Image (cartoon, rainbow, N blue to C red; front, side, top):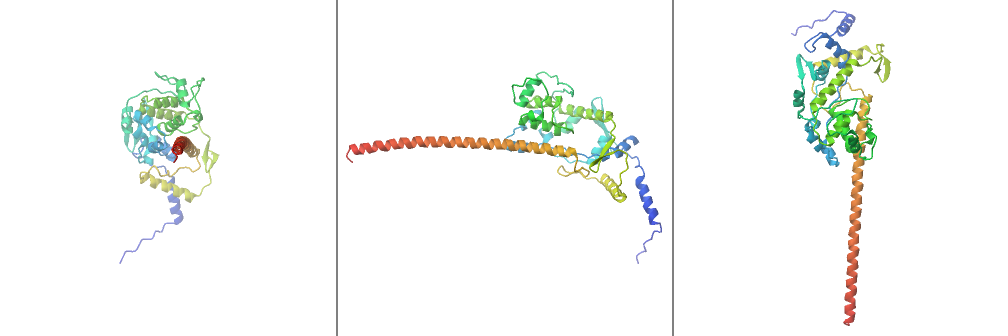
Length: 358
C-alpha cells in the first residue's frame, strides 16, 4: 500500500505572506556579479532594458535590385561581419553591459565569473575584420585626414557638384547609394538611437571612406563608439519622468497593479534567467515594448529603404520600356526602308515586262 501523503497544517494565509516575503528579499550575491554595486545596477537598470537584435545586410537582395554596394564593403573586409547571422543570449548580453568599462582605449567586462578584456586586436579577431586602416575619430568637428576634402565629399554624396556651402547635409539630400550606406552605418556598424535626419561628422567621413575604398579600422571605431556611450551613461542628467503603460509618469510614484500578475512576471523572469536559450534573429525579444519610438524609427527607416528600392526598380522599368520603344521604332523604320526598296524593285520589274511586251 502506498504511504499516505502528509498534509500541511500551516495556515494558507501565512504561507502566502511567507511566499511574498521571499520574493521581496534582495537577491543574494553570487559569481554572476563582481560586487553588490553591479548586482544593484543589473536589477534596477540593465535587466529592465530590451536587447535589440543585431541587423544584417542582405547583399543579394540589393544586387537583385541593381544596387551594387557589396564590393564597397568587400574592399573594407566587412562583408562577413555585416551579413553573418548569429545566435544571441540576451541575459549574457545584459551581464556584459552591467560590468562594461572603457579604460585606456580598451573594453573590459565581467560575465559569469570570467573577466573579459577586449583590446582592438582581440575585438577585430572576434568580428572577423582586418586590423588595418585609418583611425580618425571625432564627433564635434570635421575629420582631419589626408585626401579627405569635406566639401568635395558632400558634393559626391549628394550627387551635386554645385554645392558651395560646407555644412552637414540632411539624409534626404543624399543619393540613394549614400543614404543606404548611412543607414548601414547607423544601424549595423555604429548603431545608435535617436533621429537619423542629419548626418554626423563621423558619419560623413566613414561614408567617404567606404565610397572611395579607403580602408578603415573597424575595431577601433566600435571600441571608441562604445567608450562614448559609457561616458554618456556616467554623465547623464537625472530623468524625473519615465514611460509606463503608454504614458509618462513621475518616477518613484506608486502604480496600482495586480499583485498576482506582478508575481507571475517575476517568476517568469527568474525562470528565463536561469534556463536561457539562444534566441534567433527573426524572434522578437520577450520584453520589447510594442509602442516604443525606437521601433517606430526602425520601421520608418525600413519603409523608407523599401520605397527607395521601389523607386529604383520603377526607374529601371521605365528605362527598359523607353529602350524597348526606341528599339521597336528603329525596327519599324528599317522595315519601312526595306518595303520602300521592295516597292521600287517591283515597279522596275513591271516596267521591264511592259517594255518586253509581256
